[in-house]
Length: 509
Image (cartoon, rainbow, N blue to C red; front, side, top):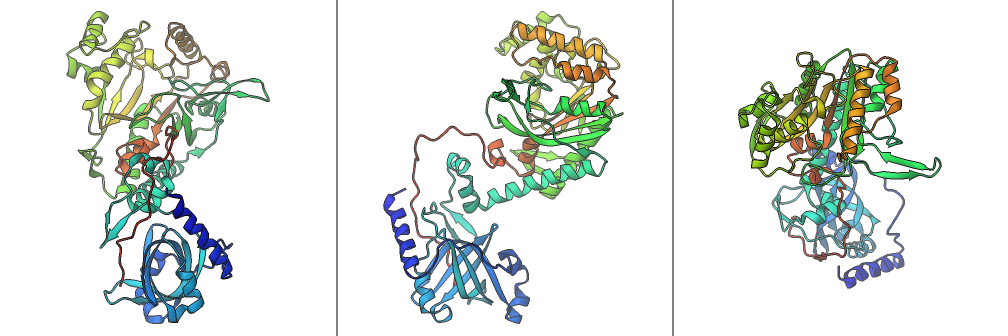
């Protein structure tokens, strides 16, 4: 940013104060939003009603003793018509000190210009906030944006400007709010209780992931940001809450890509006396309700794929999907055959890997990207699912677990929850052995959780839904960063491509 551009605006602040104008007043009596004015425009124009609206100036077109401007209020633009004779000579001097980006409040009546555009004929106005840093150049004419601010990194870092300059960004986060509200309504209407559990935990668990660690000064011991919501919520099942959920942030100290962010929003719910089959039915319904609300349709294109959420979601066993793609009978073929297939793809196999881990690797490598339409992948290996109940038809190798995949990405993970305290303790001990062999994502033994299960936990279904990924579909986003207001970014070492103020191409008359 050229310093003289900022200094010019700072000088205007001094000039405004010389004229007796405070450029940062405390409040403004607004009677309507821009959207409300436009919604009832015909009646207000006919009645001569005075309206008071406020917003940020995105276009200015002075014409001697008159001027047009556009302000934006909550994403809605409206045209203003200033006339020196109407606002007065002193106020017009103030008007000439306004810039793009300033926030103003105006009072006036509704009129149509010669071209028929709904506008407000300004009778008086107040400067509400003087902008000293010019907005990036964005030109608009006849509803089309030219030279839009599209530098992806800058948009993520300075989301506040992205929201001002790109209307589509605002729609993304309105869709996000719709999804989150609908998810809550889906569970609330079915008798689930929303609860809050600790973000900082002495022992992390509930998922296979690496944590963020901090130090608790008062207790003088290490604490961790939670990697999942699961274990505290299952303790509430023990305590007698039959249907509970939490929708909140979790943290995993792992990689970043278009479908992963170390801080993300998770919905987990636990349903006593249900199993993973009933949880599949409910998740399918919740996805339909959320997408219908946000997109208005259940058949649409996303990331180059025509998706159909009206049709029943497919339900296929993990081992069957692997056999379809590789020809391997992964439960019965020799482990060497599984290893050989992975080596064909150059997959590095950890030393601690056993059959269950090999099955997971084969699924990731050969199957995952083929699952385009909504598909529940069921009945996972026991070795990779330490919190899931053993499968009622194959107690030795499989558990009652599913993951929901869409366009090659996982969107939900669910179990018939393990409530056998002896089996659960053994699973945690098996995880501890894997950790000693080098599996740093193996789960940590949580003695307090084990003791809670020993008091008796009812049979239950448990589900985790990646809310940010669901919002990607709902808002037609390509990356998680598109649907997070302030995604994690590497700190800037300097501003590349500093913005310069330009003339707005938007015209009104």
